[in-house]
Length: 206
Image (cartoon, rainbow, N blue to C red; front, top):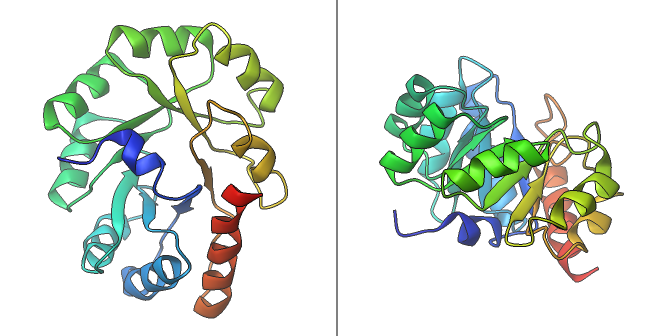
C-alpha cells in the first residue's frame, strides 16, 4: 500500500468509529461522512454486517475505509479480503503485528501502558491508538507516556467527544482522535451526520 499510517492519521482530525448493524446503510453513511470532510472511516468488526459494510463503503470515491477491532490474523485476512485500507486493533500482540506488517497495510494497534509501547517499538511500530483513552488516565496519562516516547504518535480513542476532542488534538503527539459520537447508534439522519462531521473537521483549527 502506498499510504502510510501517518498519512491516514493526518487525513482528518477525527476517525469515526463505526458499528454498523445493516450493510444497506453503509454507503449512504459513508457519503454523509465524506461530504462532511471525514474521509477515513473505521468499521469495527463487532457485527455480522461489518465486512459487507466495508465492501459497500469502498465503492465511494474519496473514502479511505479500514477495519477496527481486529484481534487476530484470521480477522485480518477477512478484513483484507473485504478491501480494508488500514487496520485498527484494541491491543497489541506480536502475532497480529507480524501478520499486519507482512500484509503491508497501515496498522494502528491499541496501547495503554509503557510496556505496550515498548513492545510496539520492538516490532518497528511508532504510531498507536491510545485506548481506552479516558479510562486509561486521560490526557495526563498520555502526556506522561509521551515523555519517554517522543518518537511516537497517537490516536486517542475511547471516551473522546466533540467537547473534549480539541484538548486532545492540541497535544503535539496526537495526530487525530477516534470517536463514536460522530454517528449516534442507529441514526439514519445523514444530514445531521454530515453536520457533525463538518464540526469535527473544524476541530483541527480550534
